[in-house]
Image (tube, rainbow, N blue to C red; front, side):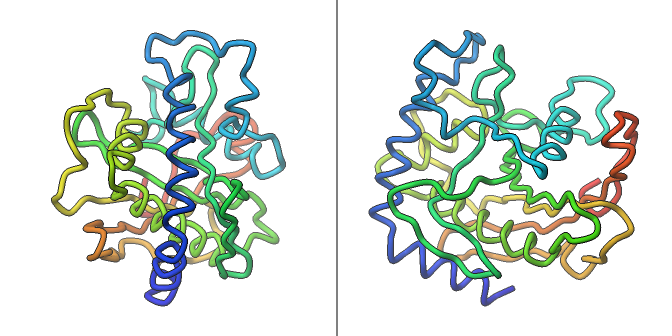
Length: 249
């Protein structure tokens, strides 16, 4: 795990000017459309197409999990809300990252978003909430659980680096993720936490040695809290899921 974190930190550090420029443009677009009074997305929504939820086999499960997380009452998982691009249009933020993760290796793509974080949410309430990065495995037969764990770690390191960006870029993203509109502060200097979660069908793999661990990112002043979230896939697909298990449940 230490090697994964080190490789990601080194790769992001080598390309920080490119990805920071890219995400400065991204946050401007998001601010145009992420309206708290829930106005609809205007006709020129192609500007934010990169942030919209994409349909795929894996994303069917992701979408069902998002629908459960966003409920205000009768929640199966307490104190979690997905980050929304636009509430009235029911659009979740599909968070792009400027690299791909293949076989556990990071490949940087400076000019475009090649992958998306499966689920980006916030955990807990009010000003105490913290980012949650979730990697989802939907195929209980062929799912690569450790690759999903590596991917979640790499995404979380990227998020920590983004939130510590200078020239108020980090705080702009801090506001987007935590659903706050305060622009008169910086990201707190104290050690902050990011929940790193791998979600997958129950009974198929044991990542207990991953769950409950905490990995410090000392140079970014973040702690990554590692968790598992098991779900019953048949119940999820037919809309009868009533509980999760794992360290994040």
